[in-house]
Image (cartoon, rainbow, N blue to C red):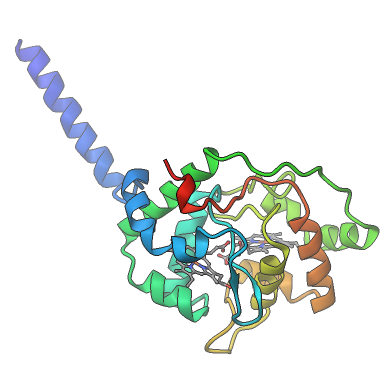
Amino acid sequence: MIKTFSTTVLALTLGAGINLAHAQAGNADAGEKKAAQCIGCHGIPGYQSSFPEVHKVPMISGQNAAYIVASLNAYKKGDRKHPTMRGIAGSLSDQDMADLGAFYEQQGAQVAVKAVAAREPSPQAAALLAKGGCASCHGADYNKPIDPSYPKIAGQHADYLYVALKAYQIESNPQVGRSNAIMGGIAKQFTHAELKALAQHLGSQPGSLATVPQSRWR
Ligand code: HEC
Ligand code: HEC
């Protein structure tokens, strides 16, 4: 009896310790409720934003949870200047971000992603991908990043990828730009025309990102 009891106490204590160590572990069910404030943009297939130019809102279902959290933190801290997402991320706690990341990562695993055949890059795109070493971080097929805090980019909307890549070249504009040590150094090696060619190739590839309309939930 006593032995069983103390084993239970030990297990509970260890469990509590683990919970503390991972205080920011995301809860997808909690995230689903919090995502009510996101679906007006991220839950409408093909939804366009007109800032800083017309482009589709990024697909986030199926994105890595750790990257979703990292990007939300970048908006909150102001490393990413996009005013709307800054406002939204600024109202989220660490726990909210973790829950939203868990929800969106899991949601992507539940939907069938539109199948497209992998395409060989054009010789120009192949040379640009090699120059930037893109696969060394974004991983095989640009869909298996080497670190979960790095994004999947294969199959993401090409017009969004282009806007995102250009943003890494901009640092001192209060409304537009992303200061990121890694991607800044990479994006600045390319012209806009080259970034567009990269975005068009990556956006045409098969991936696992999706926009899941609210009517398809549950
Ligand atoms: C008013 C429309 C709108 C709403 C509402 C909105 N977003 Fe966004 N979101 C955007 C746009 C536009 C971008 C692209 C911003 C940029 O260019 O950096 C974006 C970017 C993001 C990104 C970065 C994606 C990437 O690939 O880097 C994440 C993550 C994200 N939003 C999550 C959320 C979450 C979570 C919510 C709800 C709490 C939310 N958004 C609400 C429009 C919106
Ligand atoms: C050394 C690692 C590394 C290399 C090499 C690299 N990336 Fe990235 N990339 C990252 C990281 C980390 C981020 C997230 C940065 C942030 O938080 O904004 C990122 C973000 C991006 C984004 C934004 C995605 C989104 O959803 O907003 C695009 C687009 C992108 N990279 C494309 C490329 C392309 C194209 C190349 C090659 C020309 C490349 N990357 C090379 C690490 C890398």
